[in-house]
Length: 418
Figure 1 (spheres, helix red, strand yellow):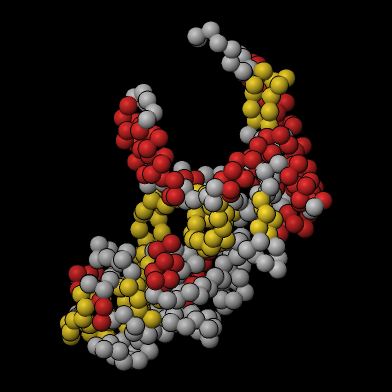
Figure 2 (cartoon, rainbow, N blue to C red; figure 1 turned 30 degrees about the vertical axis):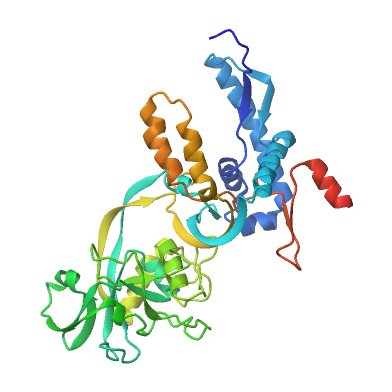
């Protein structure tokens, strides 16, 4: 519009899940193991072929709608030159100590068998009906005002996480009541006693949360009881425990909840148990749940709790829940090793640079975008998939701290022949 020449090269974003999902469907491959068995090279070649077919179709459509673009000099994200530019950017970040690998709880798409970024997890929320249950876990022995065989009344909206439970979280400053119901004794936050209005209860005594921390209990699932779990199966403190809902006692499964993960870490419990596979199914560890998808297992777990005399109450509630924006399936949260960009390290600098940028309209940059930058979290950039730009990292098997990152094909050649 101002008389300057602007390239009109057409760009094709051809890597990632859309193509992979389409090819998996055509080849009848359900999960990563099927792809491994089929052959990664053959799978990627099938993806490449699918891209070429789709490209030809889109060229016809784009011309028909009168879009003025240059197809002869187009680029695709699968082009070697483009992938090499991704390597260059990655190497720049690596050299600035902005790349790291860590074991964290992340939004996880079991249908795609890969973690997602927090940004992707926020792209598709839907109102769904899920279980909301109270279950009871028995005190293993006397502890302060807790007596052996007392029950801790625990609340959760994710029953499938219970097999991975390693602790119960209380709030150290919250008051808890010991009450009697039908000759059984329960601990519940005093402010949540109204959850028991339908019962004839007798209040026995109260205790502040910090005096309950350390009490031991018998887990609902015994599969991991004999593991070397140190301080597990005890009451711990969590800053996120409150009395806005539930019972004031929250099941902690560190493999499936970010808050749980850090609460146990702060309590000195470093071991994690995770009986859920990358395909979102229970492995052979937990009896009766083998090969069940986690969300399908909710009903079975509620039945098992009832059979064991541990289910106190169960209902279903509507709430907003994240879905995978690529597969349309419910996301879960799962601890998994992933590569990150340390965005939090440069957040202040990004906010500073944004303040020097002229935005139209101004409030977008001054408010929405600035707030987003200020609250930005470290970016999970790796995906456990096949059709995409590989991360140019080589790690010494004998010394995991010995890491080499290359930023170009020439660097890779030098590395190979050195």
